[in-house]
Length: 124
Image 1 (cartoon, rainbow, N blue to C red):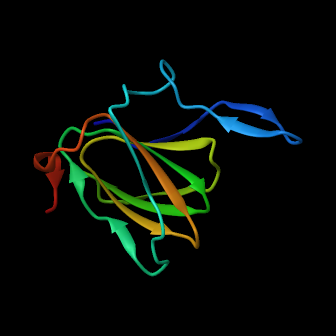
Image 2 (cartoon, rainbow, N blue to C red; image 1 turned 135 degrees about the horizontal axis):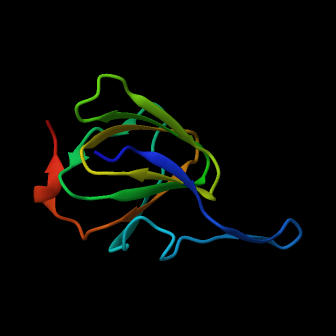
């Protein structure tokens, strides 16, 4: 089974004009079929707590900090990641159970390998 892992997104620009972080083929682990973002999550609220049968995701904290605690199916120990740079993405393969903890004002962008499909969700 593939494990979650961090990858760097290329940055273009400069300190005096700003930066452009790029997520494009062929540098991504899958073709992107859906894009969404999560905003205004209270800091005492935990998001996620579900897995997917086949969906792959790339998660990017485009603003602020998002801490992730991920249980990979079949493994006892949780993996921990912190997303706090918009040029850093976390690859989340199927059968991973993330808990997402949002810092104040955090915005999380998700690039997904499939369109929304309720049947792909694993809640237990």
